[in-house]
Amino acid sequence: MTLTTTAQDVLDLLLTRSSVRAFTAEEVPAPLVTQALGTAVRAPTSFNFQPYSFIVVRDRKLAAELADVAGGQPHIRQAPVLVMVCAEVARVGRYCGLVPDADGGAPHDLLLSCVVDASLAGMCAALAAESLGLGTVMVGGVRNQPTRVRELLGIPEGVHVLFALCMGWPAERPAVRPRLDADLSVHADRYDGARAERAARYDTRTLRKPGGPVTAREADAWRQEVAKGVSRARRLFIDG
Image (tube, rainbow, N blue to C red; front, side, top):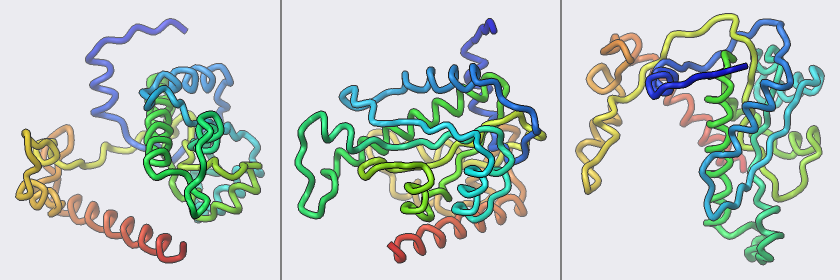
């Protein structure tokens, strides 16, 4: 496959991308997955740690079990390919000869660096796949039961699944969802508390789509989604 890309192509991909949750039954050729992941490893990485790994899941029974872990999300069962994006904390620790903290965990900043780097690589994998015509969606629900996921995938201690990246040929492409007006997220020289306060409203004055303003109904749906996500994160935190 010969590809030509312009700056406008990249901008358009970022501006118009949306998460795909309905896939056709058509298989994704292995070379496309290899190309997407081979590109992803060029993502920025702190000190060249490259603290990530990808587990490519095509086994339908295994995908179904992972879908159960994530709350039964149907697109996990449906997607021809799941890429489990993992932070390789143990690998970096062993290489550098680091001693774990008193609680047995990795030093805080190292853990944060590994999570950031692995997430950047996962995002690059998603964008690479979408540039090839595939649809993707990231699923954090696979973190619901870390022990069960470790068992299913044979993951050792010190390697953490951050999210699953569903890949496949889209059966439909959803409309682009609203985002905060970029002006509310960009601060000049100093953090602007008033600007941040306006951003937290998530209303028709602060949310935008590439085509323009959002409706009151769209803003309300967005606020409900944010509240749902916060509630879910709080429950996971309390449950440990």
